[in-house]
Image (cartoon, rainbow, N blue to C red):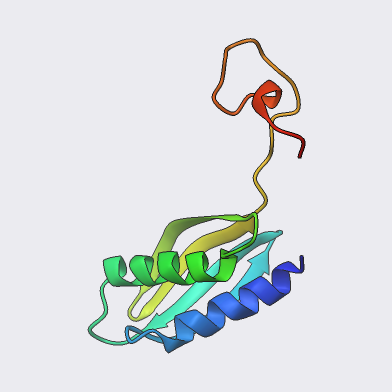
Length: 108
């Protein structure tokens, strides 16, 4: 799975949203930052909802999760720390009868 393809699909979906003029991302110190240039009447809540929907559509059918945190705002530029990641699986039984216990897995 190539994460760059997922980012391209994600940014394409974001750019099609009515509240967003342009979306781009850059990595700084290995951390991906999402830059959203919003239309004048857009609110942060609308943008966060658009990010959630675009991320969900981009991850559909893949074992990925996403995490988004608001960083800052300048006029119509919103910056978020956004990442796609593969969830970690438990590799051993800790004895606490967890719902995702490795003992309860059928032959993966």
